[in-house]
Length: 212
Image (cartoon, rainbow, N blue to C red):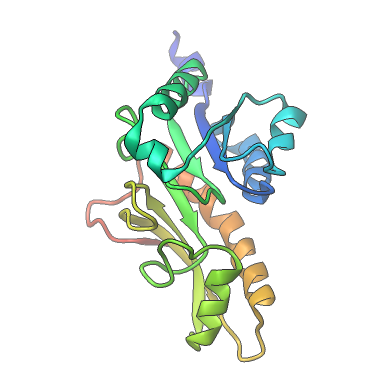
């Protein structure tokens, strides 16, 4: 492969979803000017509305049963997932609205990331997703919230933090208005973090959390 061809080649990423795929759509829009592209989609259910995005964009789709007992007790899911990722030459995995535990994969150490709609380590853990997070933020009378990108380590929202973006919480905010602010911030944070990771610019030598 010539140097010029290598420079033009984009990094293949897989995006994992459990819902409508709003973040996936954002990544697909952003990738036009990025050094990466969505080359595969992994879904946790046949009922995910976002599955139709794969068909629309002609992107390979794998639907898997990500029940915790299956991840911990068998290798069938992991084997199928690894084969799918290898077939599609995937180099990075992005969990974007993926609500299940993601299995540890031997070839993807420090190359699986997740975006969470709060400023971790606050408001993370099992059951803390979507509206649940924003309701908890308001109940705690937080003055700011935001989104966090972190590495995935097999436990809910406990992997090393990579980057964050903050938004203000006003006294008049509702869970719905906070959700809208946070999602708008996520649309900036996730693709820009991915850009830096693939360029080898994150995490930095001080291992501090990058602020956007």
